[in-house]
Image (cartoon, rainbow, N blue to C red):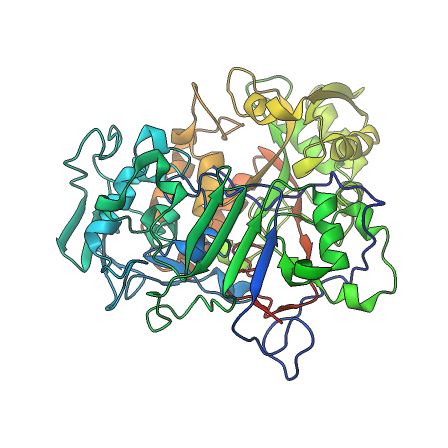
Length: 569
């Protein structure tokens, strides 16, 4: 399942006036003590202002991978992402492990060795058995919420119900000694080092496991420990873990003494507090609240505010989806006509303009780590090609045009709403395609479009990968074996092409990420020719941070400010 940084546009225009410099990010140490690039210092309190609470704050239940945010301050994992700006931050690096893993020849067995000197917050040593137990407890039904890959990848894990019901554990995870852990998979997975960044790989000491109450005080393996958890993660306070050592962790800087996480806030309030910067808010950041079109419309000459805007890119694509089992979308020429007719300039403007969206003609995000290969299977320019669309409609048996229905969310959050739908409607009208709009309440929108029984023929959708690779981006959407008829289904076209399935399997055997990326790019181009989706745009994220924040790092893995790197004045 995809997870993306929030793209909320439910922002009050009058709530905050911000000046925005496109692409402005200060990063890296500079001389002096002014600005986000100033020399970072140890000490102080970092405040994090967010809309969404930190779930239950149990490593089994967190849906996070690579972590640049709050969970990774407490939960270390076998691997993590490089804490660096831009594309450098899309690389997998060792965390608790000495390296990113040793695969067998066919990538079905992965072996890891732990570093020396690893300790929990109580000073006890971290062992391979603790990591095995942490993974196994994530299978317990009462601790659900994390990513689903373990059930699919680990041999013999499909019906496992966790250690509370089956204390014997999983035979597919071996711990021959206290510092070695071996994973046996039921199929080749060259991306396993990416999965090993997930919080389910965080060690959990069995003797300290309190089941569903573990979130109240999870045992830290990272630089901070939990001293307060109110209302299931709505308010978290973290302090230094005295047994964490930078000698075993070259990724997390852990500059502040205390981290205060306040959630459940209105987005307009968050941006107002960050812009004003009074008291503790001067040393505050947000990891889930963007600046939207209403703020961008208020761009002024305040250079100080402009310098406090970070720009992030996360692998995500907003697109038009077709259910090819529904007429007339079973006709490839109809789908191609729509692809030619879309006016991406209008769509990008509806998404907030070029500062907030890059026009897309590929399903893969426009980042090399995914395998991005520039191409346009239906070249129509920035504003569409109505004449070509009409020609294809005639060939499809619709010389006088046709009328179709586009289903969208009632809310503009995540860009599935009426603004984007109307832009699509206007573009298709020029090609003789009349689009009727069908609004579905936001609360039930995802359930509607991701259920085979209720999936409409034509709708707005989006997808973000759990790590920066083509596999978790293409496979859920186009692998026919991942079609789910009685649950959440993301293969909206219900494509089940053996040649596509086989190519996915072949790429999964490749453990060289760069080589695999090239193959994912080729597969994206092959699938794109079938017009099963129409890519619209790749979002760009703009976030404000407090005036006393130092050492801003934003990677292309998460697209958000990395709180493990931040220092406060």
